[in-house]
Image (cartoon, rainbow, N blue to C red):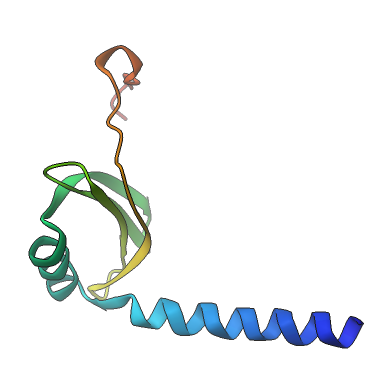
Length: 99
């Protein structure tokens, strides 16, 4: 039983690593694919640290969305994607203080 669990965990980890590589590429190619295939445009984002910028891309009809992470070397990876984007209502938007 324990061996099966360990093998399953290793297989899952390898599958996840392979998926991550398929979802990465030069930023210009990734955003061109988001735009051409899904009609997505940049909605917002921010700097996580000196190693990653995260961006949210949504389709103009708000049917699809993508979270994109870009590294300093210009490689971008799709971290998450989905459908049925729900924008925040004006009364629910968080107002921050500039830092």
